[in-house]
Length: 166
Image 1 (tube, one colour):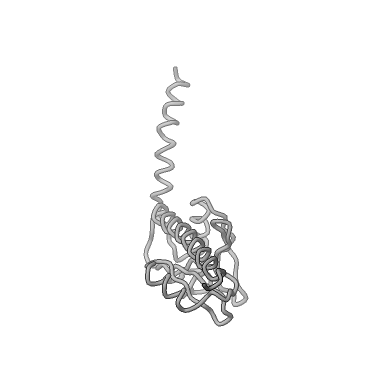
Image 2 (image 1 turned 45 degrees about the horizontal axis):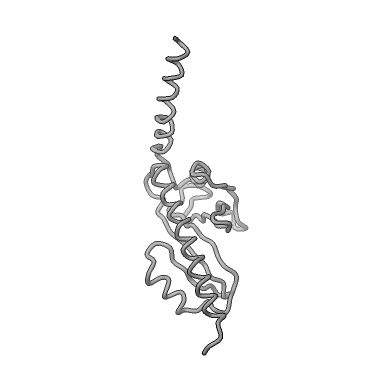
């Protein structure tokens, strides 16, 4: 009888433990905490530093790499904001018209053409205050959805650009 009660207690505790993890409050100004939150959301997350000694996280979604870049940091902590970022190698159909079409219809993820002609995509977030793991996972999920939407948008535009003019 005792083993049955123990099993019942464990089964009821499991959802509560998962819920507690989702409701855990995070200090998103700390790149180490953000890296752990990315992993807790089910993604890989390698915390690295760039050539200037600034922290960033390397990850991937939808088969493509992306980074989490940190801004306004004091050393490698206490960052004021972060950005989900990735880019596509230069392609002749990347034009200001393409960028404007995407940006006019999409509020959160924006795209731009950099000085090399590459297409950058980015979503910015504040790191001030705290966020729950659940809210952070939702941000990351939103980036994943928007990344897939952009990939579809670019595929359609690439196909249209490849068609001969009639």
